[in-house]
Amino acid sequence: MTWLVIVNVVLFSLSMAALLELIPQRLYSGFLRGLHLTMGITTPTDRQLRWALAAWLISLLAIVDALVLTLRFL
Image 1 (tube, rainbow, N blue to C red):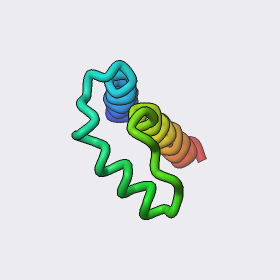
Image 2: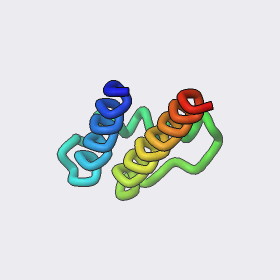
Image 3: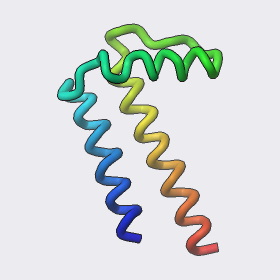
Image 4: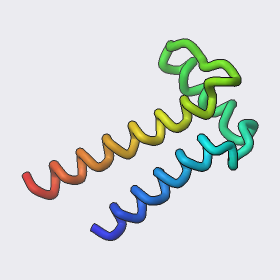
């Protein structure tokens, strides 16, 4: 269970760093645009990139937590 806490802290820290503009956009802009194009949804504008990254990371965090907790207590 300690690895789950570590994953939560890392993903939450990455999302906060993106929102505070501590991570340069050039590091994740291509990945996010490719992810959106692969799924067939509208790509975010340059202004929306950091919020899109934070939304993806928080969603990933919620999905991983739900899966782990379901498997742990089921």
